[in-house]
Image 1 (cartoon, rainbow, N blue to C red):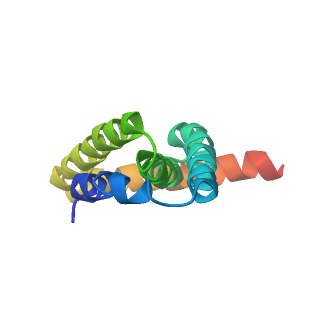
Image 2: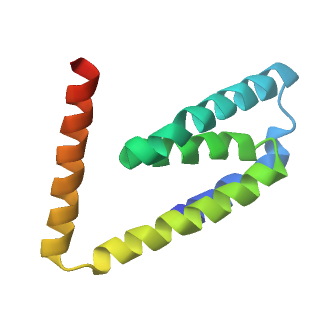
Length: 114
């Protein structure tokens, strides 16, 4: 299942979510905003951690807000496009990109620990 299909499925659950207790709805919104805002800096520093955080935060927020459902669909289309582009690359280039991100991650961890 593509990320976009998953996003569409989650967005369609908005009406059933509205039947839940208000306390649960508020908790879902708070957790969604927390994940979204926590994931945004990681998109730049560690995309492999930031993308799931942003997607999950938008997924939770899309249960409450229509704008979050639109953002989730837009973001998931971008993620699907990047994944498709990456899979079309030759293996040598993919390995180079992966090695770059491994070295970058190790360097950032070194800076944080130092």
